[in-house]
Image (cartoon, rainbow, N blue to C red):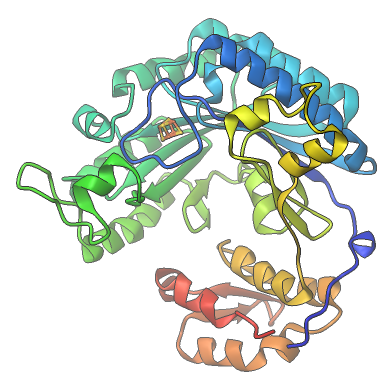
Length: 409
Ligand code: SF4
């Protein structure tokens, strides 16, 4: 299709999601390729000063937006003291228009939380806590290189409830070394019995450059006999299917490929990503999408820490570090993203939204693709054709489905 660029100025301004990246962890997990590393307290303090300066610098670009969600992600944001989190939130309240009912999430890891910290986060205004548990089995946690055991998680979870957190997510991970289907079901059941409002369940991915890559490699086969095997493809598929069934029994609804919530507790911040609402990334390596322009912040910690130092090459130098890989999305890219991201959600997309956003009908652009995918049983229209979503089979082969929506330019 013809390449066409939407004018940034013409795009409607919606509620803004603010993502704050905290790239520090007590110790690196063996499977992790996120932008995170251990750091000394002095580095964390310098980092917070740089975050503060970036928040100020970006505020001018956010006039007219109301911040609807804030997400402290990492890394391990719960390495921060409550007053440090409060300081960031204060700056946001000072310089941005923050919605009265903003969802404010903080990612945390067991072993870095205490009763006092949890109470402090609540007082600072954090109203959603996400806890990275991964498994209820200590042997699995150890194999992953996690810093905590299950008992510590339970203690932290109870303290979080006592501190007044009424919106808690627990992160879990399937397809772990040596894990069986029944072991995974045990993890799910024991966590579901605690009744968190939200559960994220991702499968372990073996990422290049991690210790797990050396143990398993791209073919996911143990490099020597002492390493437990990973569940096979068929077993992984059964884990995925039964996750939905089991969590459904406990009252959770799958609203995205890997995310489950009790009614009313979908993560508003992440729903913003899947519906292409604008978001601004603050902190090392964070990504942004505003007015159909994407960019990333530098991934070099020293560069970021020194970004606003007096000897940085002036406003142009700051811009070069905070606006990397800047890309104005073409209309075709926006359409593709609308479908890739929207179809991750169980309810799929509103067909009418496509026309509202792009001025042309979904069937006019993708009619033959959707007809073929429907025929293959991978995609359905429902609610009298007003909505479109992936079927269970479509979710199984979602990468194939998404590839069908690529447009030629
Ligand atoms: S806690 Fe999370 S971000 Fe930190 S090393 Fe482990 S997986 Fe990576």
